[in-house]
Length: 137
Image 1 (tube, rainbow, N blue to C red):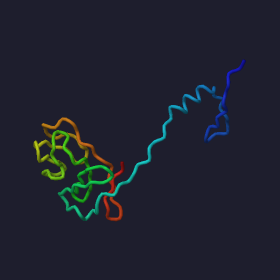
Image 2 (image 1 turned 90 degrees about the horizontal axis):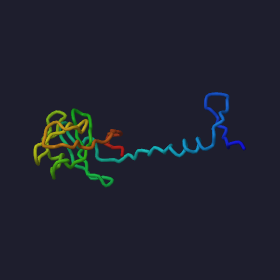
Image 3 (image 1 turned 90 degrees about the vertical axis):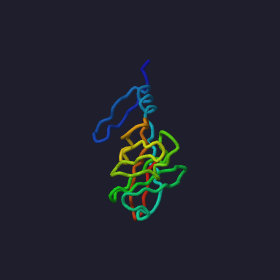
Image 4 (image 1 turned 120 degrees about the vertical axis):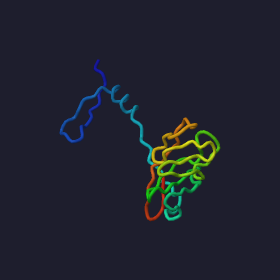
């Protein structure tokens, strides 16, 4: 008795491939749809002067929006070490110092710059369009 097979068209070629049905089913079951990013409007770009930050609550998130020399970056607002609000911290270049324990993070990458923090902060892909700041979640 022969094993079931499936004929699969190869894009960009003129041939059909014969694939054993169980292998194709395993391959298809391993493929997952990639989620489509959701764009969330946070604020108007002109609401944040260069070198400043703004706390914004949107889409169930509380984030800090930073304007670093005209480029916008967004992180979670809550410090990973304590109850500090990063949007209320001290900005030095691309570093934010938490107002609670003085831990420091890189605004662009979320990486720790100075203890006592041991967990990086979450950053979000940021887009400025039509004078508004958006993140993709």
